[in-house]
Length: 242
Image 1 (tube, rainbow, N blue to C red):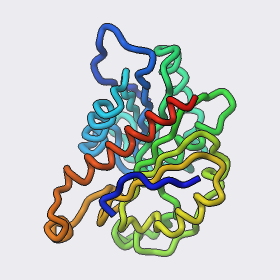
Image 2 (cartoon, rainbow, N blue to C red; image 1 turned 90 degrees about the vertical axis):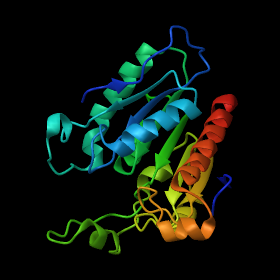
Image 3 (cartoon, one colour; image 1 turned 120 degrees about the horizontal axis):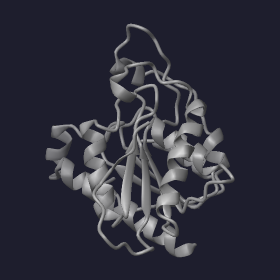
């Protein structure tokens, strides 16, 4: 079931903790994308926004081994990151027993989060996908990242079709790695409860061109704030339904 929200169509790093936490406060494990670690400006900003909007007990971020410690290796296949990611999740759950678990990720991190959510020993209340990479992005040597994003990639929906927990997609309206019509076609085949919020004019990282913002009479911050509100509403419903 696909519901559109209101649209404008290996080291753990955590936020500071209050002394007392309600068990209804979720704990979020937030995974980075393929090209930038958890210390990137984008990840830091979205970590703060998610923590505040979800009233989270903690938003845990981490670096996959291939990029930790300043490494700049090419990312491995997503499947090879699942075990490491799962270990981070299990440690977080052990630290916050009784708190709802939310798995979140940017791009590749959202795909791995979905794989982790499918494991029998992981009990997540919801998955939040920020720029899900539905299409493959071929490695083509000297081509720029912008050029590669314009290439036709193969739709990979196997993981999404296995997810059974509620899943929230936030997608840029101009994200060439996830054309909305292809995502909606996949969503119709999925088993889980689904939410979708589209950032109008946004690219794979939700960046909106200034001209588009001027035409809409909006700002980048306002567009992203609407997305965070949609995430919070979806997560609240998902937690309440368990």
